[in-house]
Structures are given as structure tokens and as C-alpha cells.
Length: 218
Length: 324
Image (tube, rainbow over all chains, first blue to last red; front, side):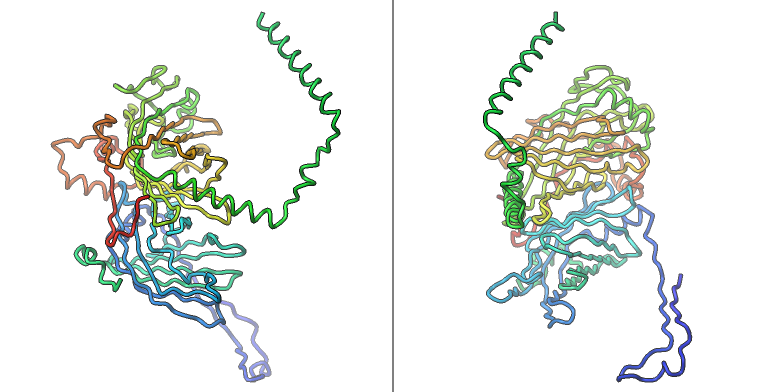
């Protein structure tokens, strides 16, 4: 399916460059609407990709749009175990990045890792053919998510936890079909402006690598 | 005679109330005085929120530890009737960790039925099990592995009876809280990997949550009401899990969790009869079957009996998790 926005044909005058900016005469936007999977078996197969030991890489981008951004390197490990007949998943993770504080030691959203340790539990939502999960961090804060699987990606949008005001947390988890790599992105948007982006890439480890600490420098 | 006695009691109460009203009338009171004295300012709201966050943090830590579970799985008489009308065997794994649908068959040993399990009278069964909860880091997050069993009750059509089969054998439950919304969130993943979660409010020492039953899309309106009572300094925690269908309670799972030592293995002492795998079954074939099973379909009773409960204990290099 494609959506196109075609404004009326511009007059020649409108094509002229004004004030250093060129006005476009025609803008075409195309997109494809992806449908959420309605197959419970596909969800089960997707959940199975999350099972096992993983090494975390990635970055945490602090600072809102327009503000000076700061990318902090992420390291860590996670161990995810299957649970139940259809592969519910329970993960324990230890993910850290360099601590950043505001002026006078003030807390900055995302400045200090709360994922060391944290647990996250995934299960089937048979009523909506979706996935429910709950992440509890080392402060005890619970992020509950409920969403649908589109392709290989689970996307959820939930209210922020522990942050007042208009704030939402958009999580996308893309588990590659080979099961060796999972990309996870979490955006925190306050007043519709992104303030933090957590970009994690999870690489599958062998059990031996995991016992040695996942090859991280911690 | 009884009627007369009731009349006298009512009259006495009424007289007492009049006397009390007369005394109260001596001291004029403004019925809106309380509201006038304590306006809800942003400061008081914030103070209340902080207090609630503290209370939730303290309360959640009471769930940590190893518990031996005893209790009762009770099926209401009307609930069984309701299930017969609305369930039709289409549901399983609903709520309270007990699969539910119509039909019932007899049970043995520890079940103490108050009537026959013919589908018209109430019944109660003895419940036993263990729970192991660990705290997460230094925060108030809690992760529990629970294993609760009772005598299985299957219908003639191969479907589990109302609250006939435990889906908490085993299950994982995770608790955390939201200090801004003043709620405690939890997610329970049962032995069929069905996730049921929600948020509850803490009043005193009791957490109360009401959620929709899991896997109940084809059922009449179905809700699960969870109540957890964890008093300060007590060596026990109590849980009530009610299932309501068509706005009427159909079953209740009452659990008494007695704190025990971390070394308590529980199995022998609590006389939990774990389902046994048939000796002549090919295990690899079972695994294949499990992966092919559509989780949204009602379980095969034979397969259900084969799922051996276990206590998964995800270990973590470096000792990231801490027991409190």
C-alpha cells in the first residue's frame, strides 16, 4: 500500500528560491503499512530468538533534539532463559555505561544505568496475539509493555515510569531471524521531544564466552 | 421469636443512635470542616506520593524469600454453572493460574469436595507448593518462581474443569513499581507461557489488582482479582486470586505462604506430587510436539501432565543478582 501526498501544481513563481531556501514544487511520500502478525506460532518462534546468553553493545544518546548530544558506549551481558510450554522468556541483564550527571550532581534521564542488574520477562498475549513484557530495573521501577510483532520487530509505546509530565517510552526490538543478533532501541520522549535514546545491539554468546563474562571489559 | 429479637435489637440500636446524635448536637460541627482544614495542595499531593512510593518499596521487599505454600482452590457452585453456560471448553489457562472451562470429573486424595464435582455444587481442593522470590539489586524489584499444584480435574471431553488444573506449576512472577503513578506492576508468565499482567494499588498492607483473564477472548467477561496481604514483620504472606465470569465469582485460589529457610527443598515435606513423565514416552518426540503446539489452543491433557515443574534459576556471572 502506498500513500502519496501531491499538492496542487505550483506556479512558476513558487519554484523560485526565496530567502536561501528552495521551495519544492512537489513532494511525494511513499510508505508501506505493515500488518502485525496474527500467528501465535510466529510469535513463539520470535521469542525463542531471545533465549540464550548475549553480549550488549551500543550507545546511550543523552540530550534532546537541538541540544548538544552525548553518546555513551554501552557494555554488558544478559542471560535469557526459556520458560513454559510456548517459550516465555526471562532475562537477567547487567548493562552499564559511563555515568553522567548534571550540574551539582543532578540526575539526568539516562545518565546512570539502571540496568545493572535488571530483569525482563516476556510472555504471550493470546487474546491479542501479541507479546507482553515487564522490565524491572535495579531501582525496582517497572516498565510494562504490550505490543504486536510486525515482521521481526516488536514495537511498544508506553508511558514513562518515574518521570512526571508528558512522557512516553517507545521500544522497538528487532530480533534477526538467524537468532544471533537482536537490536533494541528505546526512545524517551518528553513533550514529544526525544531526550534519551538507548541503542543496544545484542550479540549471541557461546556458553563458554558467557561464563567468562561475555568478553566485556567489566 | 427470632423476628421479635431482631426487632428489639433494631430498636435498641436506633435509640443508641439517637442518643449519640443528641450528644453530638451539643458540639456544633461543620460537616465540611475536614475538607476546609486540609486543602489538597501540590505539596500535600507530592508528600502523599513520596510516602506511597516509600510504602510500595517497603512492601515489595516483604515478598522476598522462600515460602512454603498451602491453600485451597475453591470453585463456586454458581461458578461451575456459569462456566458450563459460557465456557464451552473454549478457554484454558485463564486467570489465577488455574485453567478453566466447563466439565468436571472426580478427583482423588487431597481434594475435599463439599459436593460432587458434577458441575452443580461447590468444591474445594487442597493446594500445596513452593515459592522462591529474589530481590533485584538494591531496589525493590522482585522476581518469583512459584510452583503450586493440586489434584488435576479433567472433564470427559478432555478439557480441564473449572480451576481443574494449575497453570502455576511452575510460573514466574515479576513485581516492580511506578512511583509517579503510585502503582505496583506485575507480570505473571504461566507454564503455558501466557503472560498476565497489570498494575495494582497498595492500601495498607494489601495489594489489589484487577485484570482481564488471559486467553479469555472467546469467553464471557472474565476478570481476575488478585489480592496480596503482606504485613510488616510477619512470617507469612497471603494471596487470594478470584476469577469472575459474567461479573460473578466462579473460583478462588487462597494461598498461605509461610516463610521458610532458603535450604528448604519443599518437595518431600509439602508432599507435592509432581506430574511424572510416562516411562515409555520418547522425550525427543515430546519436545518436537511442544514446539509445534499452538499455544492458543486448549492443551492436551496428556501433554499437560507431562510438563514437569521445575525451578529455573538463571545464574549470572559476577553475581549481579542479590538475595536479600
